Image (cartoon, rainbow, N blue to C red):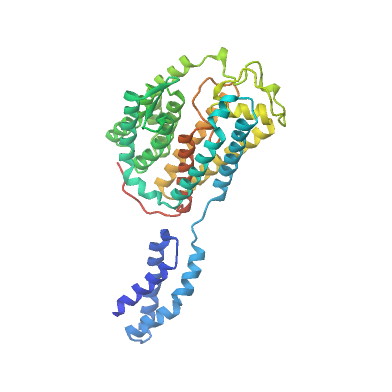
Length: 418
């Protein structure tokens, strides 16, 4: 074996004992440099090159022992502060679905088997979360423009061929109808992060191109009737633009004209005299601090398992239960925002902040609607509301956030768009 090959073989054997492949390149560079320094020092003391190589490897230590130590040191961290509130809210959501299916007076929910279906979606979502956690999110960066184009294409198909349900187009994929509009904000957060993480907003040509890329999906969504999804996507666009170093003047010049159509639809749709209430004849003041589990449900609206699940939780399980749910989701959002702000890698930081914005706006809109402070329907309570597509999507998003946290100290730059 050649002298130069000995170091390479030693380092390869060492890395095979370290399961976290994300650190292999750094370890190869660090150990390789250290071995070379030890070799050069030994040769200055009069040893031959072969003797110097052997002494350097002996000084570093047996690759089995060192590999075991480094494997323990570089275990891929699972961010428990992110995943635990998600699991807790999901379990509480399942509890609510169980009660709705088996202990409520709502016959339709019995027939829909909301608990059985939710359990399947939560388990599938958990599996997808763990798969995405192991996936290197940085690989998405070079595909961002294709994710963006695919999102626009499917959104256009949804507009042209979708079946309208309560005014919102659903796309038929053969075995199910998918509300693609509620998926769009998450896909935009992923694609925008890759496109704009190294964008030069100071260049006037880049500004107009960037503004156009941000504006097109908002304008498309504005024609769907999905006001909540449009508003969430608009806030994601504004946040991405701001965090990617656009000036305040540029952000305002983009936001003002683009907000006209969504805000117009919002005012047309909103009717402050008939704010939504899942229980006609009841007010939030009728709910107990610790729930009485209403056995009768006067004037119940059908959306009690979807858009109005938080109201159902307040009336049935009490304010304490609802406050716990609210606090868990709020903590989850605070955690991912703080993680994003501490990221050293611009793409990871922008992706984290984009997803945090999506969750935040969705959570705020859903809470306001359930408290009767907004007439804006279509915003599901994260990790609680019934619905397969959004539960799977939210779990995948959490998996991405866990993947980002796992690699939060990396600085490698993928392909940038500018």
